[in-house]
Image (cartoon, rainbow, N blue to C red):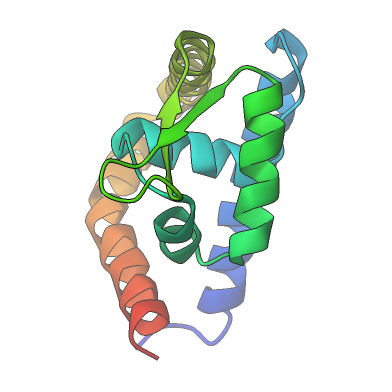
Length: 151
């Protein structure tokens, strides 16, 4: 049985960590400032090269027109490339540009280094507690994803 305030505490801490990481990484960014959803789209295209706008919208749980607008912005910024689909010339396949790949790689490396440095400041018991919590957090994320995918 979990304490009644666990869900609120968990959400508060996780969103706070995410917000603080974004703030800490912002000063070293070159190029246009990206919103969270834009970064998510770049990450998705990086892991699923050639994904279409509709499929990306579905994967990110966003409206198609919102993703289309982001694609236009990221294409104008030189981070995404849009090419005609193989089977249907009206559809578009999304690919990262070299600049987009570099931006995503830099962001991942800087994020990992930042969090690693702060995890290393914790004592051994806290580091072990965080490591032990990761599988449970992954199960929580999977459960939330399953509910969103199959309401």
